[in-house]
Image (cartoon, rainbow, N blue to C red):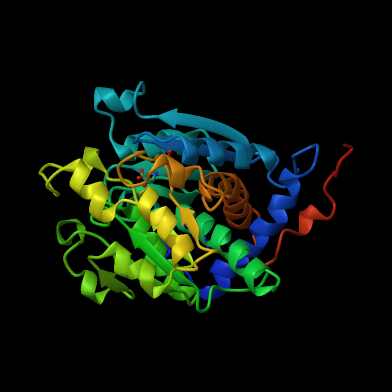
Amino acid sequence: MKHLLSTENLSIQDAIGILDTAEEMATVGDREVKKLPALRGRTVVNLFFEDSTRTRISFEAAAKRLSADVINFAAKGSSVSKGESLKDTAQTLAAMGADAVVIRHWASGAPHRLAATDWIDAAIINAGDGTHEHPTQALLDAFTMRRHWSKLNGTASTGSALKGMRVAIAGDVLHSRVARSNVWLLRTLGADVTLVAPPTLLPIGVESWPCKVSYDLDSTLEAGVDAMMMLRVQGERMNASFFPSTREYSRRWGFDDTRLKALDELGLKDTIIMHPGPMNRGLEISSSAADSPRSTVLDQVRNGVSVRMAALYLLLSGDSREAAPSLSSAPSSSKENN
Ligand code: ASP
Ligand code: CP
């Protein structure tokens, strides 16, 4: 694996290899000295053409925990605002010796373009491209679900997939790169996925995706769900009105207090509530749901660092299958517009 652009073509071996390596990386986060020498001398560039809190910061933390040098580049405040193209930006980064480029871009396909050209010879990681994909988000979601599923089934999480787990993904699927990456990855890992959305927020061709589709959140919950993932209503990508009102949206498709109570009434005592963040509290998710013991929102953020360490490690250290050999020798608690 030279790049991480999408989950659509990720094999089950590669997916489980990343998740297992992330489990090893998570042990580093528990040490007093949260650092490994694995990527010393390597340079990771965070190239962000769109806003981000979690993804940008966790890639920075991940690279630093692996001892890489990190350069943060935000399009706002850079020469992109003077009209500099993606090609010239990439070539500038190449001249500075970037070994990996973590790119978030408003244009779907921008990371693929960087990977396909000879503008820069670096590992490219897609940190979210337009409405297309967000593979490391799906991997951290799968990591979070796998830990939950293994605990429930009393099995080790390392080496395992998500066979039989029932996952519902609800909300603004149309604009969600998180939904796309999750559907592909969860299919590969053997989960049973249902998308729930108003018809106006489902993409054309969704019938051919490897999942079920429903317009009704309550009947989906009644059928039984192990993980309920709520998606943000992405107002910044909407150029029309996709639902009658915010009140109507949260009543029909939001995970509100009534639905939170319904989980108990339905006997779904182990169901987790997920959200990639940032959340619109009171719209797609109520505060009680977001802050309830069922919520994995902050676990997802925490797990994001381990998963991104795994991705950087596997792409930059050579062998994409071998699980983090340097971990054992690490110090422990010694404490588009081109
Ligand atoms: N942060 C995620 C993304 O960038 C989800 C969202 O913004 O709703 O795709
Ligand atoms: N989940 C996610 O990608 O968050 P950010 O947009 O804050 O990076």
